[in-house]
Length: 386
Ligand code: G3I
Image (tube, rainbow, N blue to C red; front, side):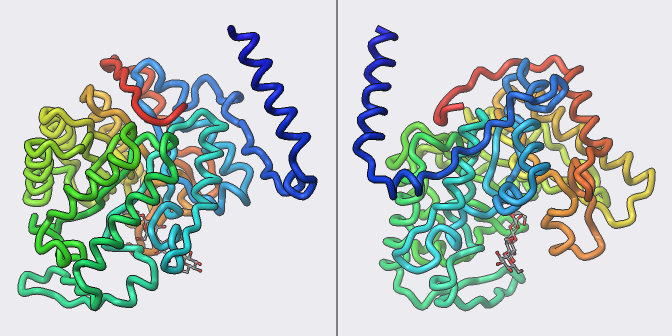
């Protein structure tokens, strides 16, 4: 059976080559390199095997193409990748009706070649909208200081646009994405719903359930997540996300998990992260740490370095302790490429590797946690192929 199958595939391959015009052959893309086979035994991706947890990173696809050392670390150290920017709406539909998945496809091909799973990020968000849509939006602030976005497009058109976007993007990657961040950052810090244009179009948060349903229709195997920041500690925002997750489960909306971005700052205390992961897991959901980094005011003193190392250690310990925590993703790995200094001037050093892509003590700390923690094994499989 095996033999005849491979003969058949081989024959089809030969036929395809014989029938392919020379121009198409010349244009065939170079296969993505397989770099993972040379992963050291002490790499994060090899050390994570006993737990079944996937250790991942956000990936900047420009660097993946331009910087061999960056590509090598991505492949050798991590067994899950997230598109830092190239799956966002502004990239995939730069002109209305014109789709461009080229950069995201290259990342997915790289992941496939390197036996990595893919976290899709992100489908429904108030930010990084395409310029043709952003141009219709004006922003004001309400009495509580929260932003209110208003589009000049009618609600019916906004609804149709969002449905088309979700279904086209999830459909394009069907079978190739493990987890999707379907809805990102739907709450303000005070726990009130963010009044973005989706809230406006639906007259409430009904867009969230619809987005999950559309994504599930487009790829029934993909695990669908709600993703947010500052929900690592108990408070109004975390409580609002919890109430949402509970409500969606009660309504049988196809939500599989909640992503805790976990952008931490050493000037604040370490959050009650494990307890929060656990209370969402107890709803029957998967959980994940999706964008981990730990920033500090520069320069980093010895005391601050020790605090950073401790925070990284605790983030991974919290995930390992919660059986439903199925992936742990660093938001990039090199300090030279972090989003942090652009958003928080004077702060940085938020990643596992320094400006020269040398591993820092927090990297070694994660190795130690993986080596020494007896974590329950998570046998989760689901969509994706790696
Ligand atoms: O691509 C343009 C380039 O053409 C231009 O020359 C350059 C000039 O500033 O900008 C480039 O775009 C930048 C883009 O990243 C790609 O590098 C944008 O200015 C910049 O704002 C954008 O920042 C991203 C940010 O999301 C936008 O909100 C960060 O890289 C990305 O790390 C960050 O990621 C978010 C998650 O998606 C959601 N959670 C929070 C997290 C951190 O903010």
